[in-house]
Length: 196
Image (tube, rainbow, N blue to C red; front, side):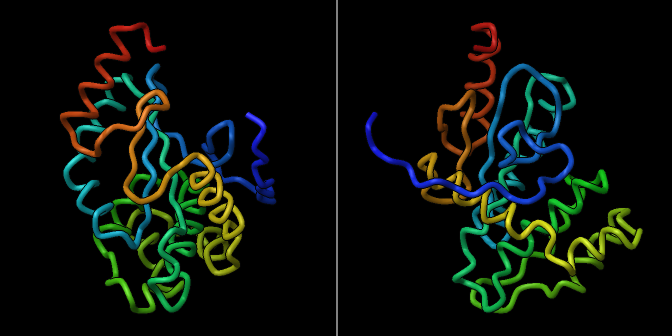
């Protein structure tokens, strides 16, 4: 292909457990890669997590998949404080603290409505305390916006990959409908085919 892709500037830091490309957080170590492109302000993403989260957790626990979450700042325009990017950045801080999944659940459980300010940085820090991120480094990471440029990178990389909305799910790089049945079928097919 001869089309020029715009250069996406790499973030100054990537969180702990970031994918090799740096644009996601890896949970689990199974042979089949499942990518989930999410936005913490997106109501459909909250529904997706409610419907598909238990299956994904089970597949991770069974060491069938490596789950890569890509927390995007896609819906910044629907909040007055760039909430999507701030929540995404905070999830990077949570990954550093070893509580990414717990924090992800907390963010969806406390999802603010679209169109408002979203949660404040103090509220994001407080959510972290509730899932075991009690040390001051998490609060400092959130308040200083350490991973805001990482959030931009995650979003730009996803858009470059053709992600046009959230939630978007891919199994072994192939987009599948974001339902437990289709995800499970794609994972089983990938496992049966030797994972690649």
